[in-house]
Length: 96
Image (cartoon, rainbow, N blue to C red; front, side, top):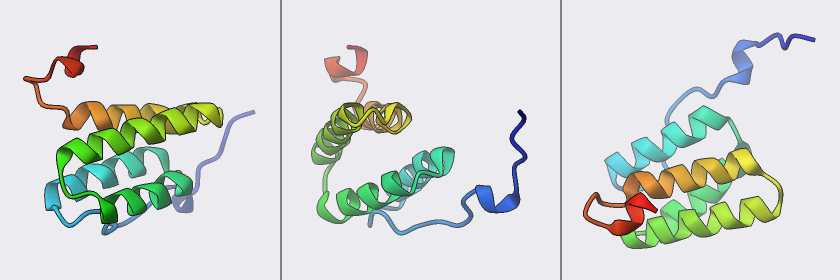
């Protein structure tokens, strides 16, 4: 059976997820790749409470771990990808 996609199946627009324009843009990209409304709401919460990269990375890893426990593997992958994206090249965690 082939899925027939409709325009409404794809998110449109830019959400205000974080006050930093660059972080906001990338958080929107992660959401738009998944169209997962749970991920969107969780990222809204993270964006409102996070004001530095260290905390953002930590929260994305925590949300990834929580998502794995709920067997939401795609959501977990995007949280881990988000964390990895914001880890600086100079940090050894980037390569583990």
